[in-house]
Image (cartoon, rainbow, N blue to C red; front, side, top):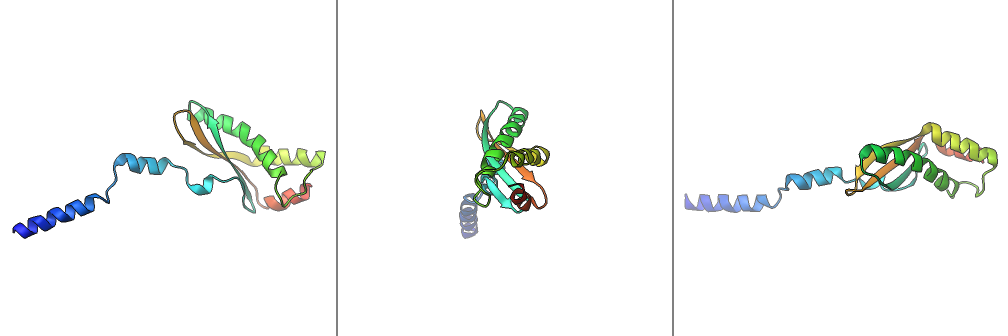
Length: 135
């Protein structure tokens, strides 16, 4: 009986190291997965921009992320290596229309009390080919 209690105690001690607190679990769930922390073409249909936004609330971060995401997407898309370096004026207008029509904020996650991680995506079927046709 005594050996059973000792072995049970050892088993409980060994398994308690694998348990995590509720705070750790919540922190892991709130962290942004690494696939959202990159910017660029993530598929032939989706262009993604990751930004850190200064805001006090999630709603404010989403609104600011939409504005800044559109500007940042325009900057990054014009620098993509698969596109010619300088688009025409009509090309810029068409690119801006695509970003404004198909771009949206898909994720807003807290980084700390003042900063939010915002993921902005432009999703359209055949987006890469559309970019090539614009230039």
